[in-house]
Length: 542
Ligand code: G6Q
Image (cartoon, rainbow, N blue to C red; front, side):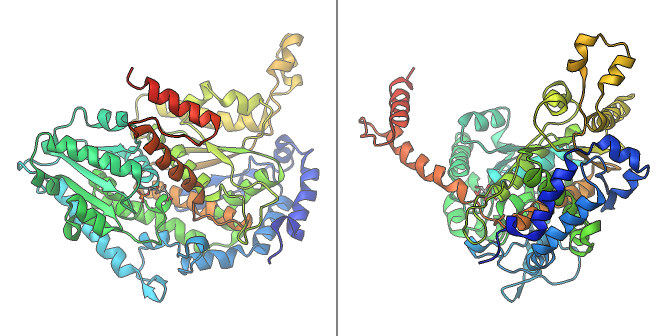
């Protein structure tokens, strides 16, 4: 049995340090070191991370790096890149980094180089997407595709959906790429209501090809298509991204030619660079997708090679550990100041919360400290007029990542300068606040002083890149992926399984049968669940 993390000397050193840092304000830290921004910034793969507005000193960082080393972070990182079965409960390797390996180096797992297959599937995806983009892929009646509808959920939806939104400026506008994930029929109905079946291509994206939501939507899509086209049309209007060739064929899709494979060592929430990215390739083309892979790869190499002290994902991870495990922060906000990134918080919510929302350590013991935070966020500046109040003056500590770009794709008047003025102003206000003395100096009426005071000392990171493009998006997502990995290592949890998703699925199957039963079923749930099921059965006819 390994030592519980919170028993490590390095962990205890940080606990002791917390007491010292309790009294330290960012105002004092900045006043004491005029070069603080320089001392607490680093750059990787086109991104600047300014982490100077955090409640840290060199001592804090030194102790965090010591903790990371005590947790064997570097060997753990090498084990992931090296194809070891680090997803222990599913006995699998975790090799999303192979999907964007742009070097000639082989990547081995179980004695086999996965790169030839990775490259072959990528070529198959590029070739197919190009046929859709050029119009040479025709629907059943000979018309080109004008809409691609991805049917998938979770990891088979959030990545390509987020990236298609993020990279709209690089996308073909004459082919509409849409996403249907929810089992709520409204989602499907609203996404297809203005589409022409003759010009619509469905991508059934499901690693297992058994997921209830996706298969329900796939069957509804089939019915929708066959309402106006004959059975043979399925082969021209459906393709699949899956690992399950048998079920794909049974659905009527030619698994030989129109199924795009991936592998069990690609976790759903880490699958954007696999064939799951197909709708994105249709949108931005081969060149754009390759630039995305380049960005991912550049951050992967940085993470694999840089020292912990100069390693952007490692620093982001350890700052999170500091706030969540030592300073009591329960949540973490991601605030992109770019409208194109409006789905990024939802995407990262899955990446982070499904990975590190775990309560058992690697040896199955309950962890005596808190693990992954609640991740949330909205694009700026909308959030400023909604929830920022609580971040500024509420009683909770909420570390935030502010994400921005020096250039805009839509340079209308002074919009972009205004947007960026807001991002910089927010991190400044959060760090430095406004004191009672400053308010009095401005002749604020005394009764209002307590309400207008901003304590400040609210920690933020600023992530700044020149432009939102496929490369910078890839590098950003990779940074968060590796951040999550590092935190999982420090917290000694298994970041790559998701057993917590299972229970609800099993119970929903049982209740579905009860909802559909013709005669009143014998219900053996708790009194609340029984009553809700009865009420729904009684009232659903309106
Ligand atoms: C992600 C999870 C989960 C998964 C979905 C869809 O890491 O495993 O979100 O991606 O449940 O699964 P399928 O691709 O098998 O339909």
